[in-house]
Image (cartoon, rainbow, N blue to C red; front, side, top):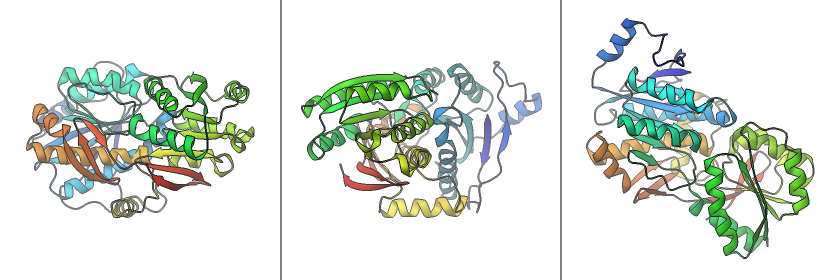
Length: 394
């Protein structure tokens, strides 16, 4: 799925603009475009900055798609109201980054070849990032990756700004060990690169506290039968289950966890968890569940209050709930704006140099990027019904 979203350079719309939708074929060319359409695409002037938003709209992480799309649209509207980026009006196209990897990569090839995107901003799994970065590197297209991830991204042209285990998980593991006396840990995650690499780091942090891992497993994406996993967890008798499942997989697992009675006796620490997922889990199944993140909707800051006011003004009171994963699309575009301003250019080399050491502002407040690594204020929170109660900055 592809959606082109155009915003005027001055003045943001009161409601989201209409979306021009069309399907991208799985072949090397887009059969839904006529020769005249291609000619139109090639005629577009250099005053446009064409951004491809690769956002998971389907599959397990698709739960974050609505908020992520809205957050990106909001950022574009605000930036265009300020005159665009280096005088160029942003033209945003949304592409589904869910589904089979080869289809996603084909969409990226077509976005570059036929839609002539100048750069990509992505909210999707690290498995997609690993494949997509090969495409962007080959075409020399800058690529901003926005969500929480495993860390260590050093591919030329890729700028990752999300939370990493060193700053997200380590303080929370130490807090649970100190305050809750947790020493026995069970790790369960989705079967792809982010949980694999994150668990490697997490095991070191658990050892630092004198704790140990009593079990670990990885679950195929889309799995919703969790009875075998819960039986193994019950048998291992952990103090804490660290959960690196994503999207709807986390929803179904945590529902089952609560329904079978484990929630009353066993702590949970979740990685890619936000208000959107918590709503799916439900208040009855979120007992003793903790989460660490660089953003919660309940953070009492001027930056967050202003962001939420503008989000609801644009999309209405019944808009998709705001969570850390979805709003990271907003952060990615604010990061791009700051990088381009510092570089004074949208060329690859100046942008990469500028992006390695910079401070930018978004819904999270100020985020510092030093030597290519993002640092932001982290918060530990406990699920409280359908919301998160902030415990402390970490």
